[in-house]
Image 1 (cartoon, protein in one colour):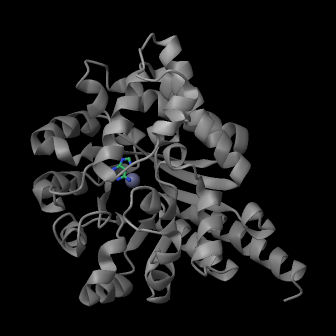
Image 2: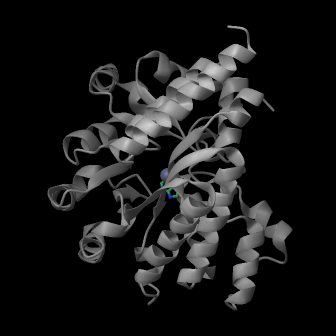
Length: 340
Ligand code: ADE
Ligand code: ZN
């Protein structure tokens, strides 16, 4: 394990809360909430965490959410993730969630926001970790469902950092959600969208032009379009890249083929994230180790991407300055240790 990566203060901007549900916890919640699982034991469940593509993954991910029933369950999930953040020196985390999966089953949407908010409150008290949640519209359920979800989120704006767009990407381009994103932005909320994970470069253009997003989630297909790369470099639109997710979902065949270094060298505001760490077997540290080993990402690149993540975060200005100082301090200590 690289000592530099282990001790680096980190920021995570792209992580779905149920994607941090380890098989053991899924099993435990199923037992507590009396949910029958189609697996003989935890090992069989773990073996099911293998995916042909994004659609197959999303379907299994949603099946796993059946075991989450109460605000306390969301609190438990959030605390387990923040404990992991503490172990990995993640100082700020912004997590995705949604309510639609639960409201469609007749569950109360408040439980999602309450449980996660309680987790973040305690995570801050216990470990000083800042952050919060970004609920997502589920794109393959369509605009009508998103409009209903927005009516709920509108009443809870004080509890969320902003709103996102996730789940099965193709054929649900961002422009389908233009009018609702207009409303969300007009209400003063930040907006992000998954685009260019499986969808082509036109999905990224649409997220920029039609949704006016503050960040693009994934965005790795931008390299297919030179004009888009120029635009992203000039506008410094942040991209939350998730390398181990991309290889697990066969978006990229092999880690050695991952475009993260090319994107960074093109001057793009790349950040590194885990997406669904339990399903892909890699939290933020493991993602960093993977791109260092296979993609030629240097320690200096790692600092650059962390600085990007701090700047691209939805923390307030004072906390951003705080985090930049923490990062600077780490860099100095490392330079002394390396005799640079
Ligand atoms: N929801 C959870 N993980 C996702 C991903 N990688 N892409 C889209 N939606 C998701
Ligand atoms: Zn994602």
